[in-house]
Image (cartoon, rainbow, N blue to C red; front, top):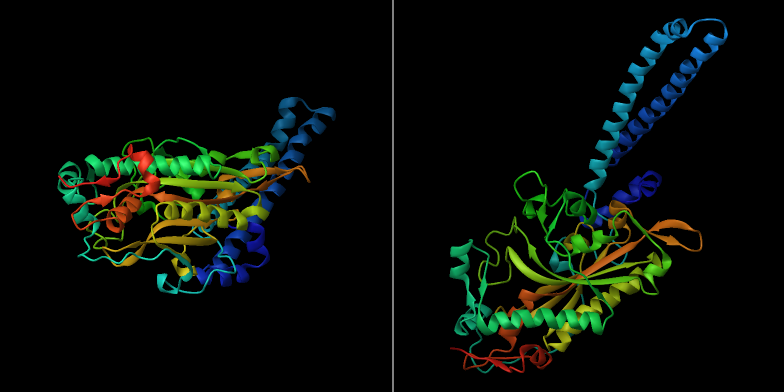
Length: 433
């Protein structure tokens, strides 16, 4: 949620900055709702003061010789009139505040100044490329053909069990999928200093509102039927970041470099609006695994933290020797809650293009305001909003796809990346049959 003080001070300036995200902020509606809320609140306070004065009049009348019942009867009409007006004013305040909250909850985060202008991914700015795509001396297969030759991918079985956009992994391929998770977790905890956490795969609506998935992206979520109000998580970002909700962290809890958390979870997405896109294979699934990195930092640390967090995700790609490129997303391609985002795109020879494998974002205090996630500044002794960041380190399924395609051999086998061999029990190749 944006800073209400900033919105009141410079609503037109905020609207102008939001246009970089191709969002039109309704300044007139905001100002009208804010004025109505203030008017109703002021009226409520005035009427409450009048009510208090009228109530005190009972005591004055008693001191003047009236009985308690006579004193109450004398001011009863005045109190009744004030109470009716007060109830109406309080309701008007609530209504105006609710409408204002609904408006603000639908407003995206402000993009950072360095975010490029642009409407879609074609305007993203390439920052770097790492590694050279392999030159094959045989016909390259995509991961579906490679995985099926290894008897490791079965989409028909998944369709029978559930439906489209699900998968069944078997044998050596399932083992590599598990090994990738362990490799990523071990790397981020031992090398990069993250603390591993385990969280629920179901969350409530407050958690989704806190990180910005609700109310805007409800159609992308799987909601459970019944009265629980639970949703399947679209990413570990939601439960992990919400660990700081309604908390004030002391400076020593943040430490020198903030709180760094890593978590592996399945992720569940309806993929609304993606019908017809990536229908073949594992690229766009309703259920997939991810190792997520989350950081909670002081405001002045956030820019450096984004570079570091993105570097931690890059390290996994480099260790697996997978060619990739890093791009800074333009305003029109950025997420709702993000102030700045790097996408890491891995080279997939089966598609002959780079595809996203990690998205690393800095959210400023946008999520923290929605969650009331704060830290106590020892210089002032007062609570201040944290800055939050997250990124995939990495999307496990897409990493598996990248290995199957980049490490495939002419005989149908797949070489195991050297960094992954210890996590595969010394196995150096996946072989057909």
